[in-house]
Length: 346
Image 1: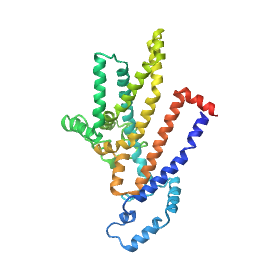
Image 2: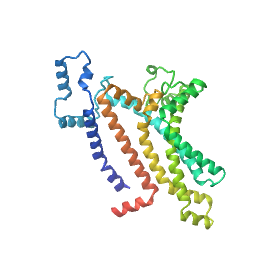
Image 3: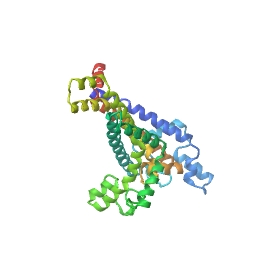
Image 4: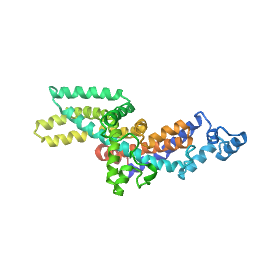
C-alpha cells in the first residue's frame, strides 16, 4: 500500500504544475485588462502604468508565472478585484458549502442509482420487471435532456411558490441576516447551527437544502443507475454466478458476490460524477443562491475577476486530483488484482 501511494503521489506535483500553468495561460488569453478593471473608468494613463508595474504585469510571461507559483505555494492567491478581499479567505468561506451540497447530492445519486439499478437488474424479464426497465430507460433519457437549473426552478415553483412547504431559494439559511450569523468552524450553515445548538435554524437549513439536493439527484442519478443495472446484469449472468446457483449456494452469498464484482465500475462512475458535480452545481447554486463555489465562479467570470478565476481553477483541479486518488485507493482495497499487480511490479 505504501508503494502504491508513493507512486500515485509522485504524479501529483507535476499535475498541479501543469494545471497552474494552464490556468495562468488561459487567464492571459482572456480578453480584458485587469489593470483597467481595477482602476475603473476614471483611470489616467499614468495610473495605468503605475498599477501595471505594481502588479508586475510589465514583466515577461514566465517571470510573471514564476511569481504566481511562488505566491500560490505560500497560500497567496491575491485579492479579489471586486471585493478587495484575499481570494484564499473567500474560497475558504465558500468551498465548504459547495462540498456539502455536492456530497449530499452524490449520496442521493448513489442511493437511488444502486438501489433502483440493482432491483432492475434482478427483476424478472416479464411483468413488472419489463415495466420497471422501460421506466428506467425513459427516466434516463428524460433526465439527460433536462437542464439542472430548469429542474430546480420547477421544484421552486411547486414546493415553494405553490405548496409553500419548503423555504424560499435564497441561500443555505433563508430568512436569516448573514451579518448576524457568525462564521462557524465549518462554514456550512446546517452544521454550524447544530454545533451552536440552534436546532430551529438547523431545521430551516435542512429544509433549504432539500430542493438543491433533489435537483442534483434527479438530473445525475441516472448515471449511477445505468452503470449499476448494466454491470449487475453482466455479473448476474456470468458463468461463476450461474454455477453458484446450480450448486445451491445461498442467495445472500450470491448477492454478496454480485455486489462485490459490480462495485468497481460503480465506484469509478460515482467518483467521476463527484468531481463533475463541482462544476455541475454552478447553475444549481445560482438558482438557489447557495453562496458557494459555483455561484462565486459565475460572479467572478461576469466581473472578469482574474485572481478569483485562477484560484478557483486551481482549487477545482486539486479537488479532482484528490477524488481520483481516492478512487484508486478504493480500487486497491476492493480489487485484489490491483494488489497483485502492485506486488509484482515492486
